[in-house]
Image 1 (cartoon, rainbow, N blue to C red):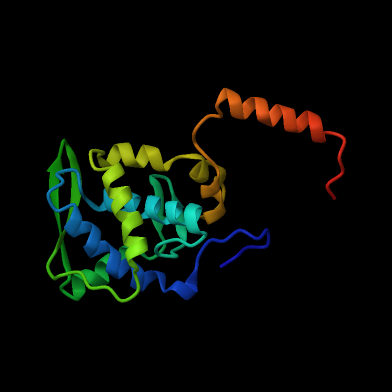
Image 2: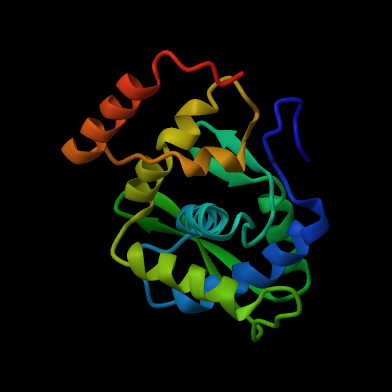
Length: 191
């Protein structure tokens, strides 16, 4: 789905829901020993993997539209996909207390299977899992409120192109180069 300004919100041709059905058990199995792993951490891992893949290859892992929720990005069919996986007997979800908060922990009941996800995509997911291995849901939620989430304020979904912006401040060298380019091209008409 692309809006009138040319932003891409979803890749329906990628079968996002089916990809989520493959990815959720994969991530849950990878993080089964992580005490901080629950539904929130799962959603954020998928978000960061989708955006990282889009930045690198202009193609996300799932292709899902990312709903701009107050608590951070959430894949459009996330809850329905969890329900479908539970109904099929692939996962179970249990609630437990985690430092005074309710954690919805996902456990895999059957071996994850793949038909859509590639090794290249799973490698990106693995790197994201490794990057955020020691993070809890609150930390990941805060991190997911980066520039892409902020720029989409007032919108229902987050465009994938917003992932191309960086949350990192410019270095002095980058700032000097930008100022040089601004001076060099200030009188140019690019229309």
